[in-house]
Length: 240
Image (cartoon, rainbow, N blue to C red; front, side):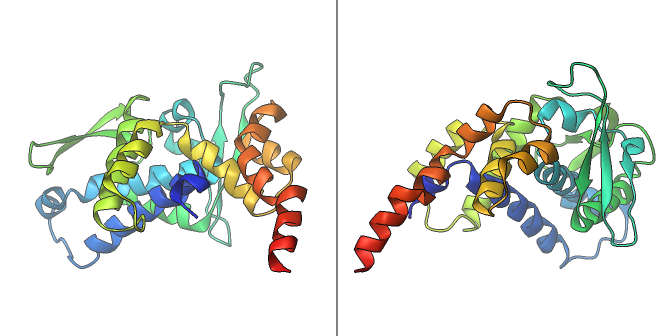
């Protein structure tokens, strides 16, 4: 099976894995001062890890991600999980808002970012200004710009490819995928991963705030074709 067979579904986990790798690398060095943190660029790692985990847990659109305030997060509960309150979204015409689940790992990532960045209130995901060499200059009070989400995803994919986290992927194939990845990719990947895990359409739509069933089915159409009656019949013949 090639990487193309997975469609967008590869990128949801690949991006989260890239963030985990970055944090793992930082764990070998114990920064003692703020200058140490800035020289490592660890602030960027913490905010990216929190952002990716939130995006994967909630399938949040880019506008929903950058709109998150600290006050929108409830928890952790006794299991370490939490809830994200989403005040409004693209399909929420009545502005009724919605709640989305945050896993214990995501809540831990949020806590690490808030502690490192001293984010006590206001926007959760903030602009981090870097120097030319990649070291951190400052953490702003402004929200991330929605257009920055795609740029972050592409940068992480390049980093993951360089570290061999994407398997035997050629440079040409990497570039082809980079050209198709967007801020919507994790949302699409979450739908595909849920279909692959055997979740039903109603549960997926409810958990991730989809209003149009046709959109979700289109995201899962490739997986459905490969697991449908025709595919099962061909496999039975092949096994004979």
